[in-house]
Length: 233
Image (cartoon, rainbow, N blue to C red; front, side, top):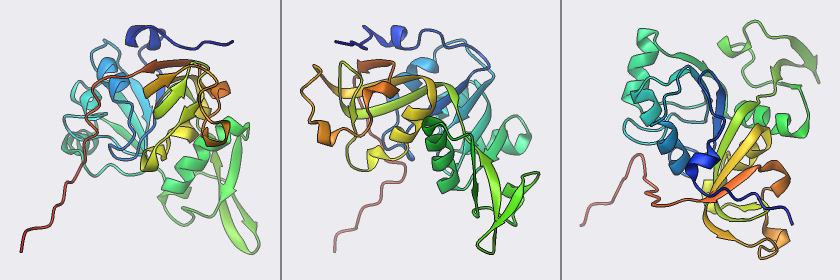
C-alpha cells in the first residue's frame, strides 16, 4: 500500500528553494495551509512567485512571507485585506498579476487536467486581455488563458489518509482541490490523518494520485479576516 506520510514539516518542505513558484489553497483565511506557510516564512528562501486567491492579512497567512519580503510576484484574484501587500505593490517592490476569480480557478484546474490553455470571455475589453489572443465563439469575443502550474502546491484538508486521499470541509474546500491538481509536488496538511481505506470513497474530493506528501497539522487558528457581530438590542 502506498504511504505518503512525512514525519514532520521539514520533510514536507524538502526541496523548496528560492525563485520557485508556489500555490496555496484557501479563500481569504479559510482553508489555508497554516502550518506550511508558517514554516516557509522561517526559511531563507526569497524571490518566490506565489499563486493564491488572496494574500493573507498582515500578520497571518501569506502576510508572514510578505513581511520578510520573500515574495517577488503574486498571482491572485483578491488582495484587499493586507496593508503590507498594498504598500509593496504601490512602491513597486512587488509584482502583481490580478486575475478574474473564475479564470484563476480554471487555470489551476486546467493544469491538472492536462489542458495547456483555454478561451474565456472573462476579462475581454480590460487590462486582463492585453497581449492575449482573442477569438470569437458564438458571436462573443474570448481571450486565451494559459494553465497555471507550480513547483509546489500547498493545500489543507479536513481529513486525509496515508495514500493522500483528501476530504475538505465546507467552504474550506474552495481552491484547495484545484491547486492540488496543479503542483509538481503537492503537500497536503490535514486536521485528521487516518489509515488508507477508512475514508468513504464517495466522499473523497481529491484522489491521492494528486498528492505526493501528507502530514497531520497542529494548532489551527482558523482566523476570520473581518469578524462582524450583531450588537445587542
